[in-house]
Length: 412
Image (cartoon, rainbow, N blue to C red; front, top):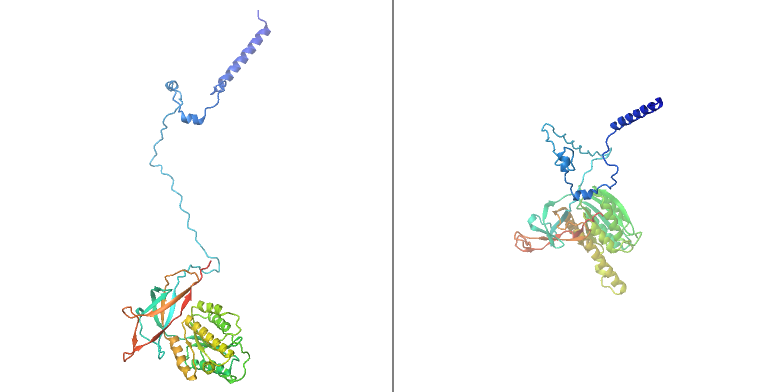
């Protein structure tokens, strides 16, 4: 016979068992056997050894180890991909305020050569030449002439005159030569007067009134027989300073150098002033040596001092001639005053009447080297040009052109 206490315990146990059964029914079944302690498979081994499908599970309808080919659904033609985003607009470059538009400029080398053709006997300019009559060579290589014209325009000239205590004969020659040059001036010409001894002195700045130049020459002539302040003649320094002043002026310029040519105390050496002269591209020097008659009378005198003096004058003449030839000018050595009018007329014609040739050098390097220029005249058949007068007598002519130019130095 069961006691009430025992029946109550049995009923309580029954309820606990039913509660646990219901709870177990709600929990999901485990996917992995908890007793399987084997390590997980290596992915590389799985790639090398593909698993075979489990036929038993496939036949039972459950999932197999290989799901097979994945079916990709077809695209609906109505489902178009979204359009690509538009390209961003190009940035607009705007200059900062108060800054003008900036442009790029390419410097193409171009050389301009002014050529004078004069008859040797009379110094008369030879007109009527054509572009085919000219041949231009740079460092021995013929250049193609791209521009040609005859130039006759007003001049911009600086009278650079030596006025020192070397001797009144030199000062008189200088004044006569300067006065003769002013007689050839025209109303449109710009001329300045600068004198030098140990230092330079600007007597008249650039002006179109030739009377101002003549008045300054007269003032110098009033004291020509009086001792000057200094006997030193610094030709190199004066020429260098003159070229620096002319560089500020646009266009072609001319220096009429009237001096003995002897340099005594210049800070510059001949090599330095020669380099400066070669670098000038638009300055032409015409040189007139003074004291020709005095030198002619005293040349070959006895004594060591006379021989040294003669050598100094010869060296001075060579330097004056070099300055003129390098820049395409001319050098004169008058001995008598009567020679001056013809000489300055030759200078005037050579300055005003020129043939201007323009070419682009085949050597376009900007290396700062000095390029030699040579100009020749040829006939229609390419032979050297021959000239003759009305009586069919041959005429000798002279080609006046600069010796060369220095190429620009490339900016590093």
